[in-house]
Length: 365
Image (cartoon, rainbow, N blue to C red; front, side):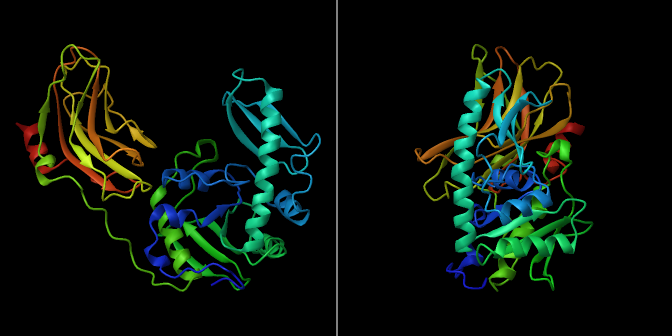
């Protein structure tokens, strides 16, 4: 357990994924780990969760208690090449996407809101550092080595008994070890490109967080149980779907009883679909109610072959039952086929690279 930490990690090996990911807080260098948390179904508050933050300005900010961040004329907003308004700190060079499209709101009003948000989140971060209940995660930039990690640990420990996980990209499975300098050093197979941060390779990050939690709190390092398909075997057979001719969209799929399910856990629905040349619909998508975190809809350009669609989502608290299935959009769409339905508690779609055998035999026939 971290030195002088008030947090009791007993039973931590049984933490659900969304709770486990909530025990980590990102301190840069970009938004990749913040997206890992989003894909795991949580949206924790964090000062640097979605910020670009180089190591030297971060060390300066920690040494100065983020005193100047968001104060006076420190912040400014500007239109980014992505089409969104970005907010940047003049003193610490932190930068993040405000989520407002350029032209959709008054920049002065956006700046005012961001200054209030930064003021609140920096107080919250300093309190978290004082308590030492979270593992601070730094995705190491290309110029960061042991010297920078040691300086970062010193800067964090000035505020409280924090544990630091420095993550690097390397070939091979996720690993974690205690560095002789006092921080934890972890690896994942690869980082997402800086210009495409949403393309997160999620499984190594989840594996790394499980392993780190087990090492930090001296818990059994056991592999997670593979996700179980919550649909009956009959739902995996190939089936033919004909959307209602006069409906704008038709939903195919069962009502699922939510009562025994963890509503905060991310679930994934994965299906294989076969779109014949005669299908005239506007789209086919997997659906878990009306929610989705990540998804892949059918490519209508791919005809007379199997392709995989999926969606991930958390489950609504307000419903006892929820329909999961496939949605066909468009009037007079004509028929299509599906096979290999898998609905499981997992932030990742089913990993099968081919449809079930019966579906492949149907294609040959």
